[in-house]
Image (tube, rainbow, N blue to C red; front, side):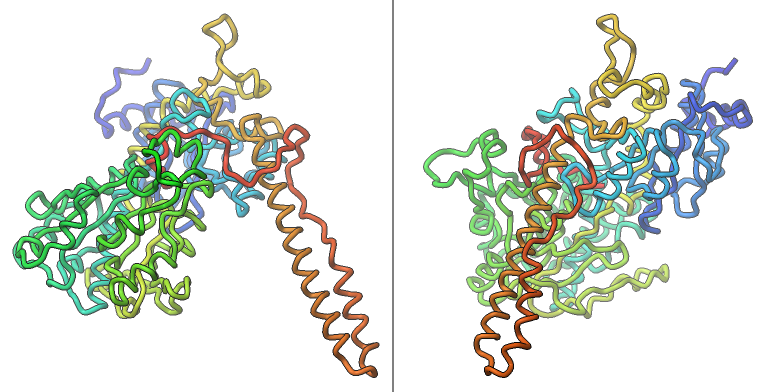
Length: 590
């Protein structure tokens, strides 16, 4: 018998490990934890040693953990919790990771339940081979991003997410980037004392550093040329709230909240010494960034979410002229108006006399292309920034700056490449990984209650339709609707809720074929014009080129990779999911 379990994680590990470490493995109640391979900066884990110990003791699960030198939790901690550290996860029926799983591993584990952030539900082209592998291998793919309250497509709050930690790490790095950009332009500020989020051993250590920066601003002030310094946070969900919480760590004496409606009066105030000893922050959502088109009616978020084509952006007119730094933390799809374009930045710069007030953009959503045109690519943890030329609408060549991690604060103060016209941009796509321990503990707490149901092989052996828990009406136990609705593939096909992905791919194939057709037509026309203009003696040599050009006029569309006879609708839109205001405001960055 298992003794009463201690709430203290350290004691819990000591209680559980010796009891179960040497038990025989049964696939019926066995789960696996993957090591992350996407980046050496990825140190998160979907389940912590403490959560593993509870799952073993309370649910009778066996746990296999792949060894990792980068994971924030040591292999010995998992072994102590009762797990077996091994490369071989084949005995596991359900396997949990954070980021994408290698395709060869998916194919080596057919029929398993795989849970991770797949980044496939918008039909992302780069991840379609991964989705194909899941279908071909009969994998039950569970996407954390789709585990929501009520488990229905019409909105719902995400239940398993790293969201707030994307906001926390993102704000630390945004303020650091702003400090680097200002220093490159000749204005050294206390923000230059900040290190990147991953350089701190904990979030508490990072917030203590922010407090010291705030104290310096209060004591020393900022140069008049950069005041008032105003940071705008777009998005009011968990990512945005995490960013605001981190900004508040600068200290109540220096942080000043500003309503979006009052930005102009703050930005235009002059001669006030308190402006140089304050750091301002404002938070805004779609009600501040778009307006009905034509603007003859009031804004209603429900109408905007359902019919975004009826709206146009006004961010560049109403808010952009007053911001020093923009932190974008909101969900976006192509059907919505873009928040900011290069042309709008150039227009703002012209109005301001050549250089806009905006000096830093931190895009925590990391969608490329996305709401912000200046984000032309995602950036890396050790090279998080680049300079964007809004006149050319492109990255300034050579403007990235890779950090040499020598363990000293001075190594993070290199900013020579960030001088010149433009705006500094950050788009790190694994921000929560920069606070790996806290973000993993938060995530594991969210995920742990769902693990036993996903590990149940009796449920996974049934058809997808029959996996839904119907025990309340006398049927068999199964997946709660929150989980059932998050299954993307099962039994060798897309589940009904995600069949639209085939339509996205089909439409993309047609667009690719049409683009190739148009390109070939232009080539053929150019060759024909060249042939008609050539001297008579050269005409014969031009004909084979023209004939070759015409032979390419009908390229075949690329294979879609997933066969489905159910979905025939043509669309390039993202998932047909009606988002509620809460869901729209918060991008769950992973």
